[in-house]
Length: 150
Length: 379
Picture 1: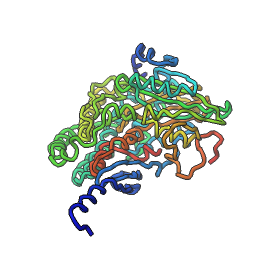
Picture 2: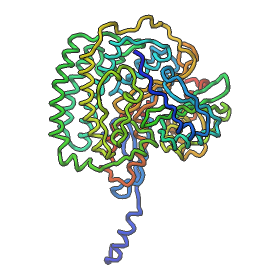
Picture 3: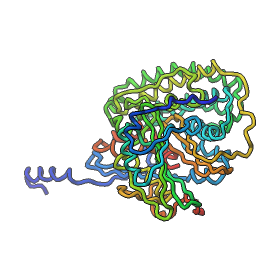
Picture 4: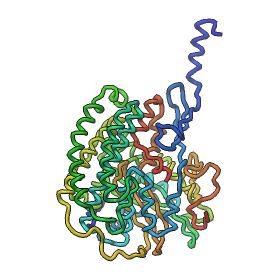
């Protein structure tokens, strides 16, 4: 049985509030309504815009694209009142993966960024405390990097 | 030696400026598992509570990336071991969404039915353990007595008492039998008067009220900023429930309400969970009344699954809140990336801010009301 599709939110409010391009995604196939690809320096603005639109931070994670030599960072958001799901993604060079921290906007990002730093070695500039979160306190490896051999 | 009153009051004035570090856990009964909290205390009051996580980190996400989809399935029962059904649901849901597999209606109904039974058993564990934290031993025995009936029912059809892995990509491991259905009906009949008894014996208890009313308030804004979900956000006046707002599986076929309280205190979260048990009973009854006939497994599920390249999310309402699986596929047999978004991590992340300035025993009541499962945080 196909899950009923949540009415796509045209969200003129949301779209006009956002200073970055949001595309409407196929929810039935993807599991999110809106998708955006932004440059690394836009990440903080995107978070601030979505915060103003009333969205909550769902999670932050990375994807290591070894062949392309890039690290993708994916920010998931949801709206607590409407259930709208928005995804913001960006790519940074694998050799020097640095992004601004959004923990000033969403304090909940603090732990998600620490976890992403643990697993992928991505630096979040302006993060209050990037100490290992789930890995041992002396960990120097990043297990979800595709070239990591256990 | 204190010579006079003036010296004594000078000492009192100095005292509050002195803080000390108190270590809670990782082996402490109130942290339910291996969570450690580094508390900076000002006397009996908390000035800073910093949770230290990772003591049972197992790198579940890496395990997801080095084996085929079907082989990762048993792991999904072991993330939040009290909510195994719903977690497996999110994983198979994500794979089915990507592979465009149509799950038969009977399988979807049984998924809802068993998930709701699982939700009740999870809430019963929380209820017993939470009251144990607060100093009441007896309710735990009642809760585990009732939970035992659910475990027996689920053991009959899944073969497991906790880590079910009952849902399969495309359907279910096997169909339910008559013994399960009659047993579940008997359980629903049994549970309703028990809920009334719980209310009369425990919920109305003045000692419990004094421990929970107004304790550990969490605002809806704090929930939003930290991404708290489940009974935590519903106890803060936001009726956010994935079963309604991203209605998945067969949930849109059922009539049920989302219990929601505005107070945001520990009592509100307590009441939300108890009312959710009653709502789950409603869903279970409806699912049994309307249970369609037919197969419980989709036809032609390929033995070797290769998902089209791209990313796919699937979220469910687990007992503790929003659980989401994000799969990234590069069109190979093995997923490129498996992200597990777990509710307890977000729910605990607000503890540092919410517990500031609280008395230590009140903060433990707050922590208990968040219903933490540590392997769910550490993964």
